[in-house]
Length: 269
Image (cartoon, rainbow, N blue to C red; front, side, top):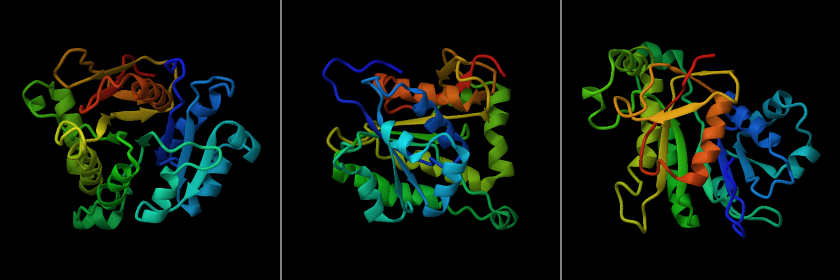
């Protein structure tokens, strides 16, 4: 991760989707940062009460003592629970106030919605009605959210390869509800970004679009690009651990504020 400037306080990240596969990859990467590293960020995991056992069983080495020493805390609640969300953003005796939000939330697949072709978007709705307003109230601007290749930047359709076009269309046809949710998540933050609103109200938002996520090496190089633009790659996989490393780097460098890069590894694994 990028070193913080001298005298600058560490980031405090609020992680949404911490108990999912990508969330656990994020926590694993965070635990690997030495506790003595002054740039090691504080990390708040916002999870459902029912997910706590899943989190601890998935990371057996992360004992309560290890978690506390590693600048991690767990706040339980639903995305629709405004009070719990506000608590997750707040400081306590050890943790400062949250400085940035990272969401690796994915859509919840439903056979009913697949068969009926209905497209509810509960996660996107909660981000729009609860999380984003709480960010504004707490003075937090930076947010990075995971989304789908089908969330396209204006003009991309005219430039992208057929391979990427079909990759973006696949979830639209096969998983319409999940696709609507992931596009809704992107809109929930980008419609409130600096690109859309005035400086006083706009969020420093980045939507990172991902292809097929894998369990490949954390050391794989990540390419961030706009489809059809400079740096485009035809590899359509991304390892979760390398994605996390890119997120921590982007959090400090802020290269993609107000933008929606596609992330891929340069080579498949």
